[in-house]
Length: 253
Image 1 (cartoon, rainbow, N blue to C red):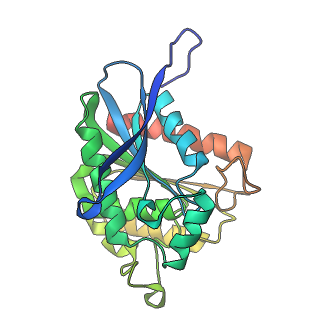
Image 2: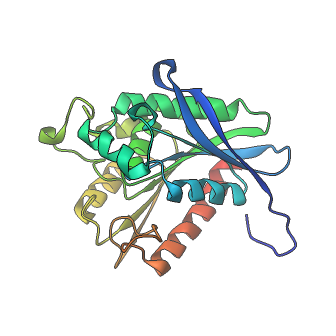
Image 3: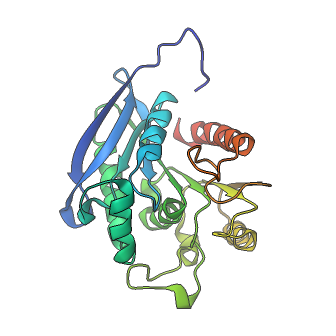
């Protein structure tokens, strides 16, 4: 959606609960454009810093651009408090189990598609650990995901020694299962993933014949969209967001 000064860009924001993995009730933040729709949808996969203010703002940002958007709290089972405190608990538990995350995201897709204002088309967006989880979920959920935006997903490629009970598979080994078109956004100064892993990720997607679009930014470290952190890079972030707004309408309209 292109911004116009004569447009009325209202939205509705709310907290909801929905069935996640194994039917567990989890909470989520939802923002959608004003009006009856139908609107394409987005599911946002938050990062390891937690279900935090940046992701709430991102949820509203997608709504402002015309998408009914839900961001489920993937750490809901670890208690409540500040995002940093809850994330510390999750880290102490070895991270959230991959299967649980995929189940929670599947619940968010089902909830969003069940709303009267949904067009039925729903994409997936994630950064950092959320980029990894987004790629993993898109591979495992198949045609439920209509488009994928993976931003600097760390540990998409994992050595056997890095696998754990909570993360038992390297997501890149599931590349053949991906059906959604994928937009990848990466910083060339990142170390998780480092540029050689981005090269491998892209090469594997191409070898599997996937619909992909990768963009890499010089001078950009891990998390360069996060305006509230030292990693923020204004020019690269603005261009990265523009790539997102160009990509999504191609696949969710």
